[in-house]
Image (cartoon, rainbow over all chains, first blue to last red; front, top):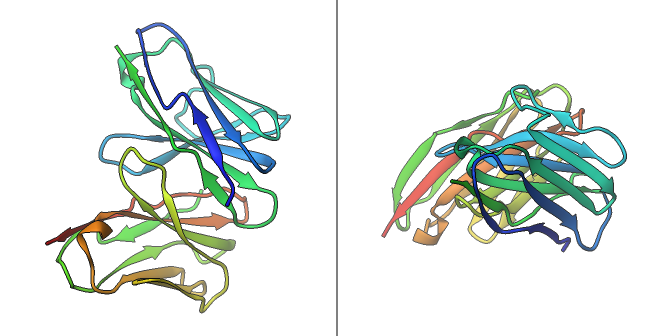
Amino acid sequence: GAVVSQHPSRVICKSGTSVKIECRSLDFQATTMFWYRQFPKQSLMLMATSNEGSKATYEQGVEKDKFLINHASLTLSTLTVTSAHPEDSSFYICSAHRLGPYEQYFGPGTRLTVT
Amino acid sequence: ILNVEQSPQSLHVQEGDSTNFTCSFPSSNFYALHWYRWETAKSPEALFVMTLNGDEKKKGRISATLNTKEGYSYLYIKGSQPEDSATYLCAPLGSGQNFVFGPGTRLSVLP
């Protein structure tokens, strides 16, 4: 099956710094990638939809200047958490939409801890 | 944005019991529906992709049905085992091609 990787799997950073998370589709091209965040005791929340070669579409309530998304190629999307704060500590998951209908593959997730 | 509901919110069953949960979604603009098994802080595991009204899918002890006209899908687990304990998420795909996750049903299977 299709494989999506995320890097890093875990990251600890200091408050005020920025962190970049990469999402790669390893064996297929993904025109669309999605970024999710898991809040404690809640389901996955869609943060933004990342389309290759165009600006990301952010969900209501997600600060686009704080969560910078770049989808520079058909196999790579990045999420940069700028000026991180402890409340940004969370589990971030990306998924990639494979060309052709209905298929979405998840990355393994990145655990971000801001101290 | 699709309004997706799942019930019950949580469920505790004894090992060996069979159980089922519901995913409700707007019936208009339906495109497909995915079911996932999800353990916190892990990547969701895809169970089924359902597209046609009346679809029935089965994978081992787990099966699912779909009614697109009335906007619901059922997930069934036969003979629940402790390893089935997880959150089960449904994610309809609308015509806007964006997946929206339901809040999930948290299943705990007690040995």
